[in-house]
Amino acid sequence: MSRSASAVSLFLTIAVATISLSGCLAAPRTDDPSGTRESAPESLPRAEVLEYEGRDLSSIDEFRENSIAGPQQVDRDSYRLGIRGLVNRPLTLAYDDVLERNRTYKKVVTLDCVEGWSVDILWEGVLVRYLLMEAGPEPSANTVVLRAVDGYSTSLPLDYLTDNEILLAYSMNGIELPPERGFPFQLVAEDKWGYKWIKWVTEIELTDDPSYRGYWESRGYSNSADRDSGFRE
Image (cartoon, rainbow, N blue to C red):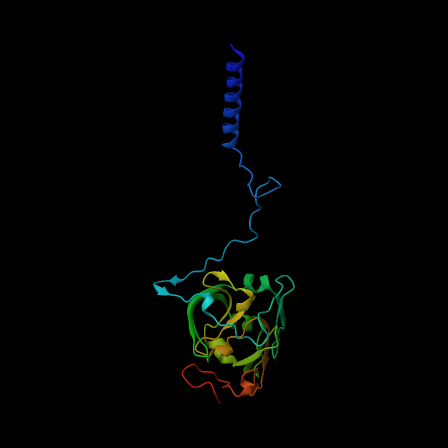
């Protein structure tokens, strides 16, 4: 065999080997000077449900940011929900405690804001009445005050929360509540104006004072906040 033929044979052998290797090993990115593959993203893109049982849902992006101090960042591991006041068994629950000790429910509920916009969202969470039952309301309790990380507060009649399927939600449209929407928990105050839908809930206090006024209620908004009536006192 001639020297030129040997060179061609050697070139073909190397080429075949190279092609075989490229079929089982990922080639490095040409824009990566280290020659290594790009690392996987830390989290998957959000994929929210926009239809449920034949009903169109609003997107999470249709909410307007109107909280009193901007979105709050709550640490999952250190978070605690306190249930206290006129109860027989005060509770301090970690995030996982709330979910693991209670059956979860989901339903589509419309939030109507006094600013003139509405959203239809698939909420998933635990029933507030079961949290209250675990704490054991005292006979004199008639009002529930809810407080949030940012200092916001509101109140609702105890029987509204015990006689209805009111959710303390941890998920909306099939995804975990984003920080701007109230992670870890937002109250789904069905049939009430949006200012009763408190976000970033950290405390549930039972009291015998129905005159308590929360953040907006103390500024002239209706304390009952019934959606079929006006929101001004």
